[in-house]
Each structure stands twice: as structure tokens, then as C-alpha cells.
Image (cartoon, rainbow, N blue to C red):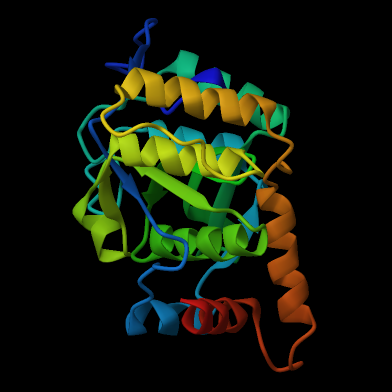
Length: 259
């Protein structure tokens, strides 16, 4: 958590690699929560309720699917290997047990009528920031639907920052933008501080900016982000609407009218 609060994150070279290394990209991908790009086709998919969407219902299954080698054009890490080692997976499972790591799952009925996990994502949440780690999709649009629900739930939870780490064409199509690491640290600081951003002098080193961000986050009284509560608020919003409406229609309307 110290790493996340200071703008770095862990990776490994292979699934069985016992070692980890820490990454601080020069350029960082984020999705502005008011800039999610909801295409007409994705909005139609949401309204048609092709998937049942849940939060924290199958965290271990989601991270295992994300760690599996796969050439997936919708994945954030589409290489043949995986950076999610067994050691890293165990750490995120522990964070999940502590209420700091969360998942969004997409389910679809299989030929036997059973709900099968077909897509999802997971990440780490603290204060008003959420650091997305990875997502997977076994059928078209599943990861996009999971991300749409994530963005909507973070808005309901009053989040300020959705970190996507590295830019991909898939993320860019959904509204992700790339910013310098120093700018990311300033946004991270804001998300951790109820008093707003710490003033980082022009020309300050990234190390100084990192220290300022951590100092603000560690001492902040900002309320902790609760993705599950934001998700629950979305379901409540759908339930309070027209009886003929559905969660998917509610999400589509919410994202369309708050972008």
C-alpha cells in the first residue's frame, strides 16, 4: 500500500517468478471519471443485459483468469506470458481479505443454464483513488461492460482518480489518456487529501513529488474509497427507478448523462 500511495506498483517477469520489481512509468494512463467513452454499441450491450454483473463475488477467479496466458485483444496485458506471479496473486488476495482490493465480474449463462464467469477486472482502492490492475474477457464486450460498471460505481463512491497504469489501444477507445508521472502524482495526492493537492514546486524531482504525495495521503482524513458501496448504490439507484428498468439500463443512462 505504501507503493500504491507513492505512485509505484509491482510486477514480475513470469507466473512462477519468485521475485518482484517495482514500476514507476514515465507516462501513466488514467481514465478521467467524467470522460469515459460510452459508445452506442456498448450502451446497447448494457441495456440488453447480456451479462450479470457483480462486485467482489469471485475475486480469486478473476485474478486467476487475469494471470492466465492469453492472446486477448481486450486485455490490458495481452502478451503470451503473465506479470501476475503466484506471489503477487497471493498478495492481492490478502489485500482483498483486508478490504483493499476489489473485483468486478461479468457472468453469462452457459449451455447448461449455469452462470459462467466470462469477464472481469480487479484493482486496489484507497481514499478516492482506484488503481486498476488487469482485466480479462472470454466473450466480446465482457471487459468493457465490467469497466463501465467500475467507472459508474467509482462515481457513486465519489472517487477522483482511476489509474490504468499503461496505455493500450483498448483503453484509449474507452477514453483513457496518457499523462506524465509527475502530473499523475499530483492527482494521486489530491485523491488522498481532503484538503486538496500539496503544492509541488515547478521543476521538483519526481522523488520530491512522490514524497509530497505520500505525506499528504498518510496524514489525510479523507474517507476511504469503498467500491462495493458505490456498486451497491448503483443497484439501489436501479431499484428505485421505473419497475421496467434494469441495472444495465440504469448504468447506460447514468454514464450518458454524467459524462
